[in-house]
Length: 277
Image (tube, rainbow, N blue to C red; front, side, top):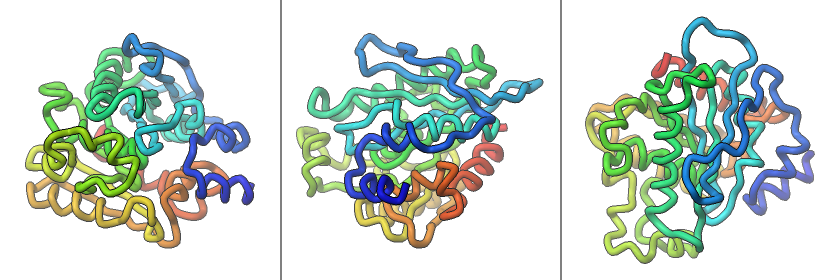
């Protein structure tokens, strides 16, 4: 497992091998697979739900994975879906279209479409479609943040978004000085228009922003900048820094074998319960 972890940290690639090997939480199961939320083959999602019965609709988490907007597959994130479901949340893990087939804002539009599907259909799996928390890692945290703070994507439906959870997200990264951001955003005429820190303001949902102090891929200042902007608008924000964790380590801390490294799952679960139950 240590060799596998090292390879993942080096590559930050889709986690399908890791997901196949890592033990999963027994309290949550995948209850729907390959559900279409749009016509494109990449517009598909999986649904995870708690095994235990409930007398009331459960909070819903939409988890958006990372991969520099140019890679990733929901097949590598069953360990996240089952971990969150075991905590009592109906969890949606969508795919979305990737660079170079598309560029900004297509992947944000896909995130919005997946959230709209969630609002309409979460009840079929025991979830409350009006109590949604958007969660993401890295590029997925960027998408989640844009949906949470920028009203262009969800409009009035944004009222159903009760919280934002960002793990190691890029929220303030213009000008675009790396290949991945140039490929995804470089054609947009106004770079500032693509940045969550521009849109964050009063009335946005509460946020939990998490980062590892050793992250050299997405610098902690991104989370700090978004937290400051939200707080300036009176939005409740919790900012958590985990010592000795890097960019991938904060995600892998959601998996059972690595939870001793940081209480990521505990912190996320407490936040979701506070804002969405």
